[in-house]
Image (cartoon, rainbow over all chains, first blue to last red; front, side, top):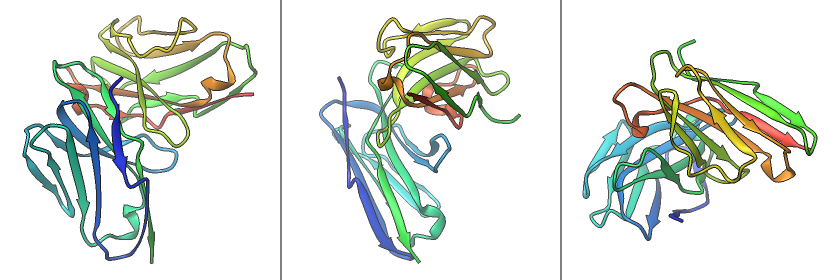
Length: 112
Length: 115
C-alpha cells in the first residue's frame, strides 16, 4: 500500500532554534497535510497544502507541497516549549478518496 | 460538547472478548472516519461513513471489525474475539456537510488494551 516516509523520527533541540522535517512518498498525492499530536489527544491540523509547489505559512510554521506531488516539508521557526509533540504528515490520494495516509511521525523535544 | 467525543477513554479487555467503542461526532457533521494508531506509528484508516452508510471500509483489517452509524450521527466500532494485536488507540474524526477528510476534526481517541 501507499506509504509516507517521514524524517527525522525524533529531534532534540534548544528553545529558540528552527526546526525542519520532511515527508516523501513513492506515490503522488492530491493534498498534503501536517498535524501535531499531544499526548492523550488526537491529531490537530496545522497546515493543508492543495497545489504542487504551494508554500503556506501559519504563524511560525511554513510548509511546502513538492512540485512532484511526492514530498513536503514543514519548518518551525524560533521554537517554543509548547511546540513539543509529535508531528505527522498525511497525504490524500488522487481521485478524491476520503482517507488519509499518515507518516510515522517526528517527535520533537525542546530543551529550555 | 464542541468537539468529537469518544468513549471510553481507556478500555482494557481480555483476549477473545467483544468490545464496542463509541464516537460522538461534532453536531451536524455528516462525514465520520475511524482510524487506528499503534504505538509509535501514525494513524491508519479503517472506515469512512457518509451519513448512515459506510462509503469506504477498505481499511478494516478483517471480519472481526465492524462499524455502524444507524442514525447518521453516533458511530460504534465493534471488535469481536479481540486479539492482543488489536491493542492500539482508536481515533474517530468528523467533517462537515460537503467537507472533505482534509477538514476533519479528530477526537482524543480510545486506548484499547487487550490482555
